[in-house]
Image 1 (cartoon, helix red, strand yellow):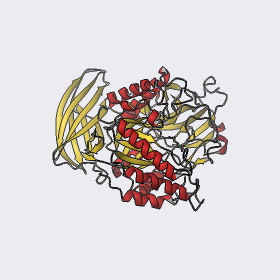
Image 2 (spheres, helix red, strand yellow; image 1 turned 120 degrees about the vertical axis):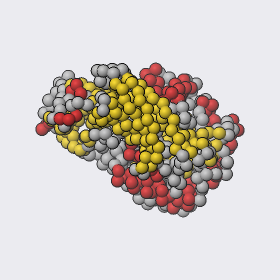
Image 3 (cartoon, protein in one colour; image 1 turned 180 degrees about the horizontal axis):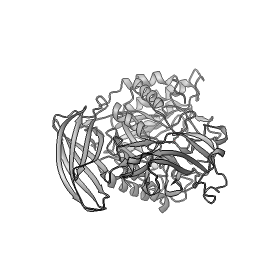
Image 4 (cartoon, rainbow, N blue to C red; image 1 turned 45 degrees about the horizontal axis):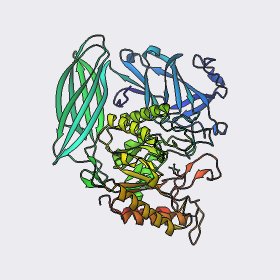
Length: 585
Ligand code: BDP
């Protein structure tokens, strides 16, 4: 199911307190908890948010848990179609409404929706029940074997951690809108695909209007008409020119809206607004070109992680984070290691951040038996498709990262990468693809990507305590990568050091704030000295929670801000480095 529905349409938000109950013995389905749950015996938790930090009884819980709440549906929704959307449920979800099963979804970070009319009662109260299962196996994406045995280092939260809502659409409606942009002199050229569905029982002749809206004013208008058979879909392709357009970029994140309207039989049909920016991204001669100019990405790997909320970054936290990233002079981040929430990326569009959008395919390495296991390939491909489907119209998204630190020293990795790349190309042929490698010179798949992205930990996991040796290894490895792939730009998608806030050492030592600041400065100097390097992302923007292990002190300390966003010493250093590094070079 295509999911790019707009929010100008009528919606009912299901955020708030839901009844909640864990099901460690997995008996809920056989006991039919989805029918008429005795909620007086259940706990209550807030969503969107993870279950883990709302009550210490659930912090380490892994397995099945149930959520339920009632909601009222207006009578006048009866004549239309109703979808129930989930922006992110970690990890598997099964959904029932009024005891009727609607469907299931696997994957914690991509949006899904179910048609719900068969189960709904209009003008009455309804009950939704969601069974969530965050069990990890060798074949989940990401994979793992338990809360402290994940094949990735971020905390494995569970629950309905992003918005859930109902959406009402007319029976003849826009199922999807795709906008690709090109630049011709001073003009923006929009290539638009409108997918229209007719769910009426008769043929429908519709009038379609497309307007480009610039600050509430329509600056272009095109009309066309289409006839669609009962139960059929059609795609209309249209080109629109925006004369004297203002282009989107970090220095001026100019956004426009495409308003599409559908009318038939003189009745009011569907209206959908789709936001876009006019910009081009190309990889040419070893550079990443934004609107034809070579860009340099300065920023971070981030995580969606915050005390109590878990994996949900509410608007206030995002407001704070963007303020800090802008204060520091960053222009970019990677959605390590899964696609981030809609709001997270809406702000990137609005504030002009260059985003490497990453799939949830992290941890597919040593512990995974075969990387090209058909079950894993199918999941990675589906999640890639779902990710691109939601975010393809965002100007901020300049590249797709298909994996983080996969087992890319193994020949079979080429098979799963080829499959994922094929999927990305089908969903969106306009953006470059990459993955974040930790195999470097031993990587067997670098020829398959458009941009080389590497995570380096010299000075931390190797050459530790010795920044001079780290700089030398870094410099030599980069030069060798460039020698092998002279036409591919290189981005350092991770580098960093753990610093426990408040620990100081002179001369700098590992885990001190000074060492972290020094390491970042050392790396930055090396990166700037190589004109084939197109960016550096510090690992990480903020400290984040991890599982229990002897390698980590309950949280990963590589943030330059603490988990609650207080600055470490590195912040001043990074602000200086970033503000003195131009975006175009
Ligand atoms: C890299 C991973 C990242 C980790 C980081 C670290 O990509 O997810 O958090 O190392 O060890 O290998 O801090």
